[in-house]
Image (cartoon, rainbow, N blue to C red; front, side, top):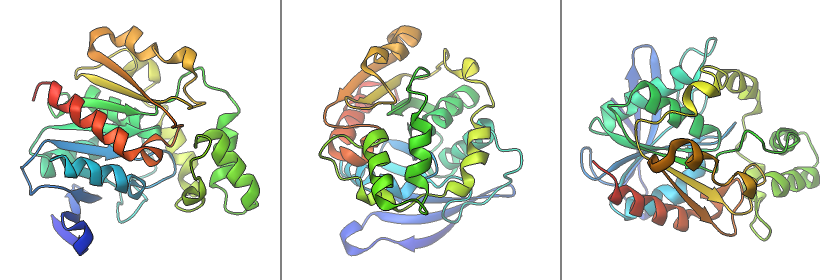
Length: 274
């Protein structure tokens, strides 16, 4: 384990750590209390984006006493590992290594959008390490089939800015929330690899199963999660699932409403078994 960056004075409890897990290197942003102190939570970013997106919600969670671990996905930051046969099982193994080495062996795993696939499979493969799962702006299987095209336009820096902003407003940001920060930070060259990885294991393998309690945290204006689908997780997981809807937020939920997201997560975390 190698600490590769210290926090600024304004972020006195943020550091950056490189973990080694076999041949895999995992670049982890750490916010909050010293190793082994505070409830650990792993935050995973959305498709084609890095864990830096979650700076604001990480700061809020750390301020509430949690130890926040943000492993960068493979290919982002300094994270490196085999990409040829990438699957959700492989990505979940990176989460497991992070929890073992930095989370005192047990943590809540919160995944934003694509990241919730990884969080759910981490619970499936490593139940002894996962205390709870947070689904942040998870998409419904019945979401508008044209939304992935909007994602591709938003991520493509070769497209005119006006088109990209329109795509961001349509697919990610509620009316009145500023999409401009998401003009930067995309890595579309990794899109095909990660989309392929999402197919293994098949959704039917992990969707109806959860060993840990699940918080289904939704943006009220999220087109990927139409209001008609608001209870779909609860219907499958029953008492294991808690549903909370945050107003004035879309698919970029933790970026749009970091304080509200952190408050709900921290209160829910305090209510579940350690």
